Image (cartoon, rainbow, N blue to C red; front, side, top):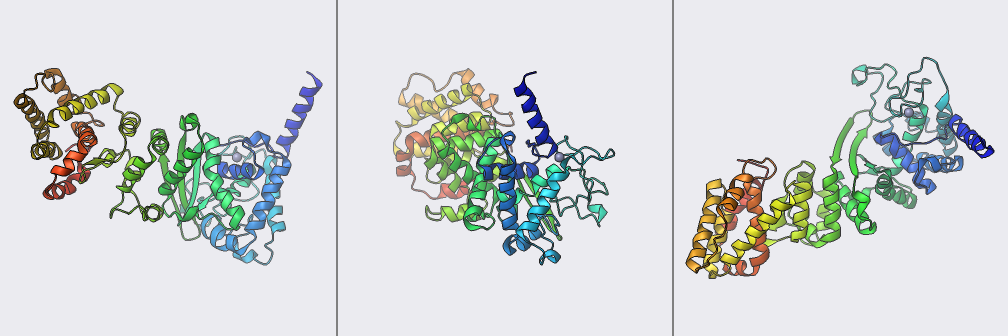
Length: 481
Ligand SMILES: [Zn+2]
């Protein structure tokens, strides 16, 4: 073994001994703390962290945590009630100072390797012995129960939970990358590069205001996330950024009255779709989202709606429900976005294969080719019959009408071959994800895309929109009757 190897090993050994060895664990709260330390140090890899980086983070946190703004309403009221480590316990107010908090933080880190032969392994990182100096309750690790009231213990472990000093230490930095909405929002993401990117805004705001990040005034966690994805996509050019990404939102509050946690998982296809939408058809995507609010926000109102109101498009995406009907505006008979974006959605999110999509598109084009030769009022009739098709037999009848139109107009080639006709009616009929209603929505999209100008001219009646409004949310693929 060379001298260099020896010295490197020695260095590694030392880092391990004094608890300076850092790594991602997969636990949202511990990883959030690590993200905070990395961001403060301006580094992206845990193994690059040095003692001075940790020192910088400790001082930064201690300075803030000692202030009244942080201590009582945020730390005590929402994250670490009665904590002795960050001194959020109201009885400690006299002794609370940056120096004392920093000292507490260091003393936890120092205990990382304090070995007790009986000590079990940490349930979070699986590497270090559990901390045995004190029971681990909600005051040092959020949402862990109160200790005195044992029926609140999920683990039924009278010592709280077996968590090592190293993981406890990191968790103390979680408030620095959390967003303060009505509750506390921690964004856990993989790859970790993405997590740093999604958490950075919180720390930047804290540096400026010395107060907890207000998430730009957003009140609904998923709205804030979708906003962040847009921002990041427009900033980060690389396509592969979202390739294998996953994001989970932890939206919690932990105080003496309340311990609540909502977990919102954002599946990879949704992330890629939203990123793609922001990049390829931002205006179209905004129109789709705008339809997800009741009461039609004006362009100027959108920002406020986005901050304060739940959006049906976001909820549907997160619940694996189709958003196809939001791609077009039924009342105005126009499309909201490009075919490109629709195609990406169908393939990546709705699970419709490329070939099927191309087939439906070509049928759509053949329908357009037939009905565009009709006078306005006839054209309106035909499109209306498709818009109104709520049952499979009505959908079938539409194709038969179009076939007759072609014959009357003397178009030689039939609309579809028998095989195609069967395929469009039955191949997608029973599929859970892609039903005939999906096909119908795609056909309508294509028709509006190509014939919008003529359709608004012929659409004089308001009767149709009333009927459609009732059915608007029950007509897409994935929801059988
Ligand atoms: Zn651990």
